[in-house]
Length: 234
Length: 234
DNA sequence: GATAACATTTAATCATGGCTAAAACAAAGG
DNA sequence: CCTTTGTTTTAGCCATGATTAAATGTTATC
Ligand SMILES: [Mn+2]
Ligand SMILES: [Mn+2]
Ligand SMILES: [Mn+2]
Ligand SMILES: [Mn+2]
Image (cartoon, rainbow over the protein chains, first blue to last red):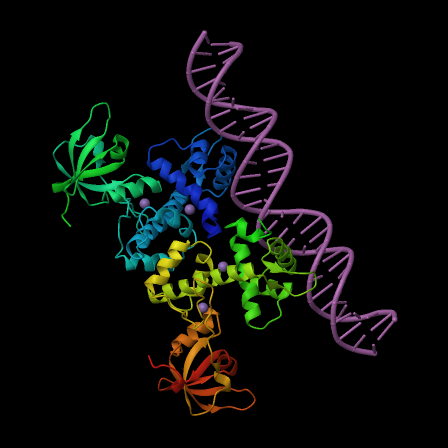
């Protein structure tokens, strides 16, 4: 009866809608200003295309938008974002854990699958995984009700020398880099400590589960760690 | 170098293209005349839409088509059909067997997923299932190379009375009917025998794994069976 | 062999989600 | 304040895949 446009429309959102909404959510959560050109950049479309779609989303009451202002999600928009993100991350974990796809490939696959799975399949996947709360990169999986556990951690680049940490999150999506990290054994939950820090934001010497490796500063900045003893073992 | 249009174009086919090609293949394999309106009917689009798409497919060298004539797949068209069908049926089986989705739901789910899974995921699914050759409805799964095992069997409606058969295939996609069959325990490989056949194509009295049920004639016509002892047990 | 009935194709439109180029606006510096 | 620079929006366009209505072709019947 009221003006719950987006709600009564029901399931009319396309993959394009969902990707824009998810992108807005993700940019927002990285504390980046959500402008149409940031969006365009993130989605590899022209700024004009982003403007166009954002207007449609505003018509659907999924985003708040005034020309030349930055964009935010409405409550229903955020619901959609969390739903899609839940699909995405559940799929990533499922593909990696159950179907043994390499962790650098699961993102691209989930990017397409996230838009076409039914609620029933989402539930089945979640159940098969034991209702997990983090994906293979350590990103939190929103619950069915839209709750997101905040994953803590500090950048490895800012960690103390000679202290044992646990890798909890990898803020990276690029396949090449993920493959590289995988080759070093740098997956969530691995033990890592800083042996030496070169000056001027130079490379770091790290101990990864016993092996010594050099790691570029910007890589280390994308690895979130927590002190080993602050975490529940296994 | 030659005129292998469809081949060099590579992966430019959309879900719409794939669904049309698959529909042509399926109609053909049911010995139905593949006209644009049969296609339109099968895909729930208008005849004009079918004509339109078929012309595009002809341009891509995927179908053979002359106005007012019936349609057939080219060699590359058939390759595409088998590829999509493989995706579809592997997915159906995976969703049913591994994720425990009810068999009446897997078709609709696979209908969407079939267009978005990568070769790597297709392979992973096939491997996880032990490279299976039939889906949950008894339909054959094309191999990676495009081979299709022909599933034998005669309609239960034409079977002999008082002989033990094995259900091998269910030629039905409708959710309601599948749910009904499932409730009767009528899945592939179940033992079934005809106790009594009513005249004038009337209902059949059948023994399903020990239980007696009446079955409408047209239902029975969609159930393919083989003599129990002609088949490898288990 | 003409014509009626039906099937099929063509023509004209529409919605979606892109694009480029041009116009409008915002922010900063002089 | 005014102008320059860069950002954002508008305008005009395109491809895709659908639609309906009109035109055309095919087939069967008399
Ligand atoms: Mn996506
Ligand atoms: Mn992830
Ligand atoms: Mn499909
Ligand atoms: Mn099937």
